[in-house]
Length: 320
Image 1: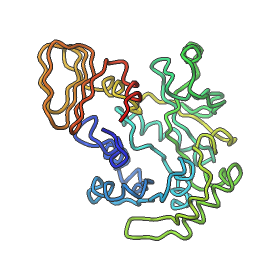
Image 2: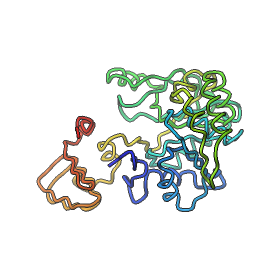
Image 3: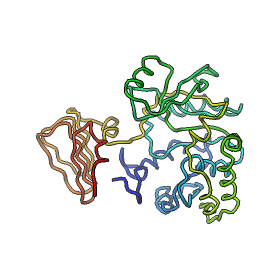
């Protein structure tokens, strides 16, 4: 269902609203948050404006992909010296109040020059996420980051859970814009120079900001983790349990879905007789099933996918 033209953040996977619209809702309170800055591929500008539905925002439209660090640099340049909360738009956060409370705990340290990452309280030995090892306490619920850990093998993930003091790296950050740019100046000066040049020559069309393509394309391509967070001195983690998922698979959607008494998650044009533990979703044609257990069945357009629940990563093996 997720395509280059319509990536998963623009799909209504968990309800009537899209993932992107739900992300906007988390920062909709004008007392707490300024109007959002949305960094996105230029090809999605019309789609974004349609889903904004008139909500004020600044659209920073990347002319090409250079990973997360240069993308965030564009927003930081636009923001000046304000604190910025960096959130992927394709994550699920079920407990928004817990998220807001974590932001509030972190803000005093942001003012003192710390760059904050949000650590997700682990619910199991997940091998699909990076981990954060936390060190000394800096404030209530905020600890210095001792180190970042790449996606582990299963035995290493279990060891970290047993040891405690580790969190999943959720890819959500909070820092002052000028402090982030200062860290780029130290650790990735070529990236900073490219971002600054691209914004200096940017074209502005209403709420759209179009950075200069040649200048931005000259930037090194790197993630914020590698370019800054793993190298900077003053990096802290606020750990939070907030019903988080990066919705990286159909199994993840089943895990957060509203299940019926038989453990089925049903969405769209579906008719189910007997069956338990299924995820069945259609955005068009009717799916009729009975006597099936523990399957993932998804219909989108003229395609139907069927595979055992628990094995949804095997979609990568499909060809054509």
